[in-house]
Image (cartoon, rainbow, N blue to C red; front, side, top):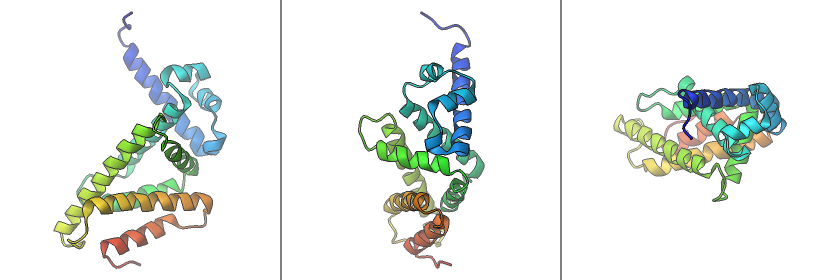
Length: 196
């Protein structure tokens, strides 16, 4: 059976509408407070309707995180080489304003260690992408003489992501921890820069 003209476009638009509603619900109510029913209500669709557009709750949540990354990139990313470490700190600061999305990220990343989990590929791709972006950023800063040429860019990129994720987890457990300050300090030490 063939689709009607425009049905694919409408389907993409509806998925985006659901994801936008889900981001808002999770930001307001937190990860634990955001049920699929509440997301469906906010999107003006039934729970069964959500499963028409997303094969599982896990896929829905992975796509919510993908949408969050897309919006963060549009809001904070400066594509000029040499700016990604600062951008990462801006995004982490923004994460403190939407703890529900940070909770979702932490929960889903732990669950995605299961090779069969629907979010497994999302996290594998995300880690690879951001590790490489940070490595490229380090190379630019090394060429400018701002960071030691002895630093291995690929390893630094992976370690930077681990520090950010680890500090986010500590912050989720103890919101009194200034995760952005700690990440800035750790990355400054690793990069051989003076820290405040």
